[in-house]
Amino acid sequence: MTLSQKIIAIHKALEGADVPHAFGGALALAWCTERARGTIDIDLNVFADREHLDKVIAAMPAEVRRDPAALAHLARDGQARLWWDQTPIDLFLSTTPFHDEVSRRVHVEPFAGSQVPFVSCVDLAVFKAFFDRTRDWADLEEMARAGTLDRERVLGVLVDYLGGDDPRIERLRDLR
Image (cartoon, rainbow, N blue to C red; front, top):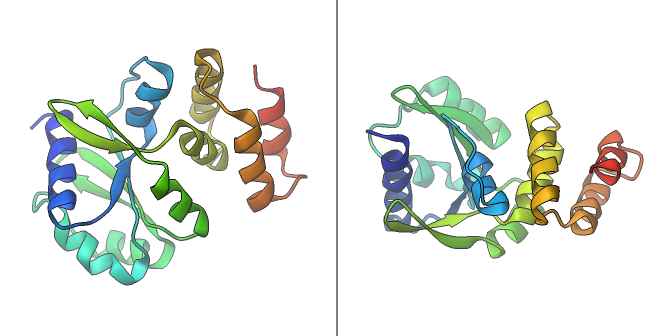
């Protein structure tokens, strides 16, 4: 099964179980930059809290491994890496009020013959700044070049959650 087929299968399974969700990471980035970046993983935001973990896991396609250690991590931290064969699925549950806001800004786009929900460009940028990895900053630079980085909105969220002294604030301000 291809990566695209797995994405569609996950979407249809969650949609069929009334589990609100959106895809992020490189998949959402393609809509924000109009350029696809190669990826082997699936970033999946599920708009449910840890109390609804059983429903979320039950809704996932049967081929997704239910590793007890990963599920314990998911229950504890609200995020974990699951696997479908050799495909990593980074699953993020709602753990802050920000996730509720993210759920209201999801946009649906055509993908592999289906209409699929994606995280908005603003929210993707916030997540990328939070994660603070080298590739995330490269993606933020790409978004800035594409004109889809709403720097002021992203800075507002970062300051609210991290405080004005966090080094990521200055780094985002300086981003070209």
